[in-house]
Image (cartoon, rainbow, N blue to C red):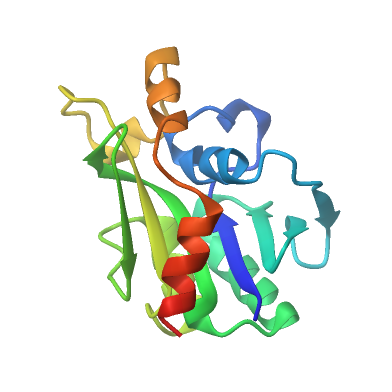
Length: 172
């Protein structure tokens, strides 16, 4: 059974180390040697690795739902075998939450995915992007770049693809 892992982020180079791209940063951490190929039809960069299809959508966050749906349908993956990795401005940098069947909590990319899939019954790996003492509104915070100390915290998160496979494999 294929597991679809999708790292959310904005496609332009200027967004590469912003908080909104935490999903793609973590996807690279989990699969550092993945070979990415562009699939123009699916509007995504795709890589394959031992039962996983890895996806970096090439559309902006608010439009990501259609790309996720296209990839899901192309690979015939059940919704419960989809993991969306994304930024979460309610969680402190260096922390994360893995959840199934939760609302978008205001995240525009997740809202788009729920709308296009017609369900919220997929996995979400919510990556903390909020600095410890920061009260910026989420819409301003997510476009700010991580500093070096914050990037180090992201790289130290205790996440492995074995852990993800185990959790998703147990919840068929």
